[in-house]
Image (tube, rainbow, N blue to C red; front, side, top):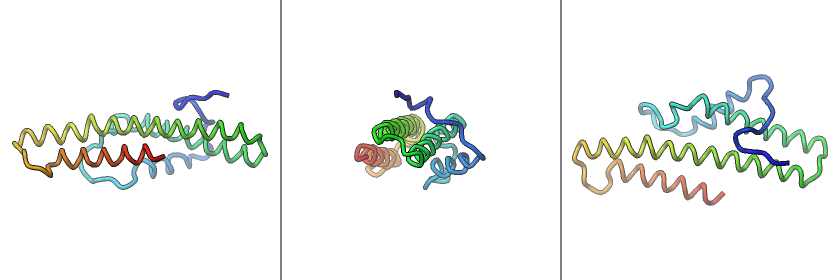
Length: 134
């Protein structure tokens, strides 16, 4: 069975997906203007609900004693879906947050080490490192 990151998982029941998705997106965030993902927030929430549906599907598969390899295939699909989401979020962070910091820094004539740009690049690098470890 082949699945894609964007089109997987059954629809969720009861609306609990939105709360869990908000927690996944909200996390530890800075309280400044819009985030890089703000323009596509609804699409991201929809995608996270699909991923949550995949995980719920995994729970059902275990409850129903489905063959191990079939479950592992679905675990792989869920993992790929989360990785794809993370990469898109990282791209939006680079395009919005890092680029905005660079523009602001240039406008203020900042050249010293430890500028906002350096901090944003270090933050993105750490996020990439975490993604690579998984």
